[in-house]
Length: 504
Image (tube, rainbow, N blue to C red; front, side, top):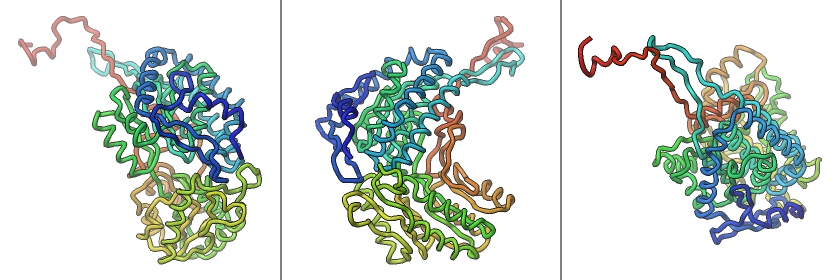
């Protein structure tokens, strides 16, 4: 599956999008983009260096006064046009995302691209609703109100698992609020972020509002985070890297938004519909080959349903179709790289010493051996404190553990340093209500797992980070709140002045 000629031609000028133009990187180091379904190199490019980051930040700073000074209606109109351009280019975006990530084409055409178009349309509308508190006399002698103002030039870093969607999540709320952005995508999957930025320019967003630097984290990423002209850092990625980003950003007291790792529990109570729960667990653990920070990874099943649930999951996993990501019949594509495939395999191979691999646990042979494929894997018999239960695997692996009472099930769900997402399965509204209150996660689904919508926030508890993507709540990250206070008395001497000089 070679890169389409028109896409290759488009990136002939380079893979840095700065000030509305594509240009080559200047680091002197190259990076190959590899199709993980075949192992073939589809595009090599020169990585961004610190000079490219400086140029992108300068472009963002230059564009800031004009974009921040635009009316909400003007920004809204531009974003509506942006959504239209993305919809027109949906096929190209889907194919390119499949090419660089190995995602099944049905995932990119039915989830990644429509979700991105919808996010764009949502923020086009939300741009008109950046409101502060109503004016009022909260002090008898003054009128107060609040303003929401852009933070400034934002430096964002996005991961490789959802390159297009993460570009949207990082860029859209920021620019809707009047900020400008420099985004660093993962260096192995930059293509759809670049297409996204080009679409923004085609829609009429001014040059410099959206900039992309395709570089390595240790070079371009860290320079972007620590850049003195970047007012805010937004990072999505692993918790360990997030800690390093936080240290760099907070050294200059930048505003910081972190969306980090997850280890989502999937709690099945004994009155749940076991067939529905099994289908939900397989879909929720295998979406995007399990490379999803909200994927179902730990299924806790109340003991009366444990055997039936485990058997049903094993049967469903055995029927999942691995294959060419461009084939609409393919259910599961490869992992994003051979390194990631080997990392997942290492977790499973070590687990054989203390747990049971019920199904999967291997890379397929035959034609698929050329790619970074790994079979859907179900593991039982692991202890709560084992590596396979505790650590983020980021692959098509589900661990199932039993529990007895409801207290134990919720306690096990919360027994993790992470808190990004979770689900609970039951027909009892009181049980599910308790689960939504007591499970410590930024999103708790009931009788489902994975769906997200533009109108609702996404973000975590604990070591899954802080701050929100999507929804109007994301504006809390990308705006400064300013209190404005007017004196209403016109008095030369205010009563409170006597605390400094004079008598009443």
